Length: 91
Image 1: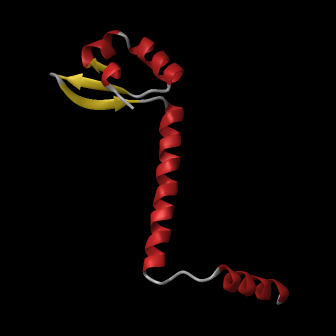
Image 2: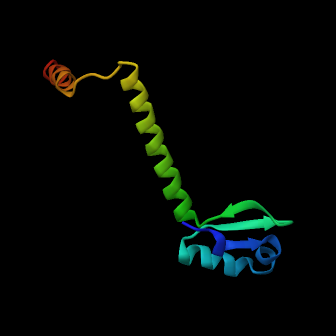
Image 3: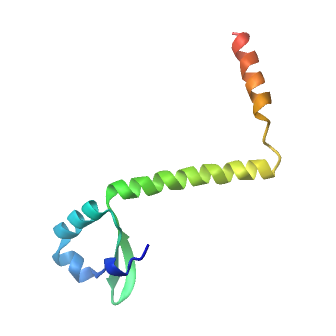
């Protein structure tokens, strides 16, 4: 994804805040805000932000799982199912 069309100076944000918020919600594309010619912030709508956070959380879970596998802490599914069934039967 290219952000070059979504780069705006902070003065644009100040003068057009309501329009920027509408555009962010409508397009669901992040906007890079510059100050003195340098990128300083990225704005995005709340729904996109939440989706990004959920994706990051899932990636962290996958990374942790892979790390556990590498450390040899994984167990075969059949063993786990058997243990869970045994626990259920003992209740």
